[in-house]
Image (tube, rainbow, N blue to C red; front, side, top):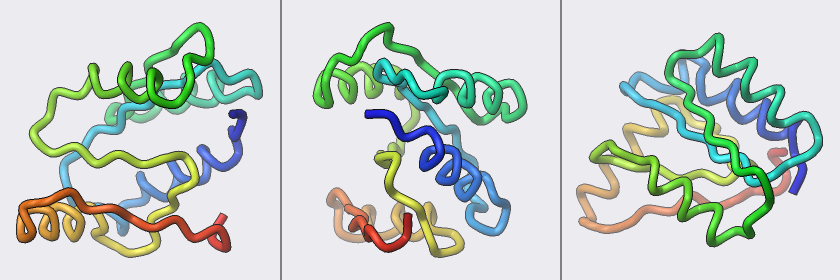
Amino acid sequence: MNRCEILNRVLSNIFEPRMNREEFQILITDNGSSDGTVEMLLKRERREPRLKVFLLNENRGTAEGRNAHFAQCVGFDTIRLDDKCLPQMPNWMTILKSQAYERNSIVAVPYDPSVL
């Protein structure tokens, strides 16, 4: 699916200093988009050392695209967001991690279509 503008907005939000005080790295797997997303991601990757982009040469579908993405994850804590998830709360990563540890479970963030 082609959603370059939405993804660019989400990345701007994530990298905004007030939103995150955590040490983090963003891994993005582009699943064969054709709307300028690759160019936007590579430009941002050159400017932002916490961003790492992986390109799939064709759309492999949701499950295979996510599996290819998770194969690149090496950290202890992994937070997965779809491109339509726009965090609204400062320190959202810290809050998600603390909830996951407290519940010893996976924590999900609901999607609000009115945000994007």
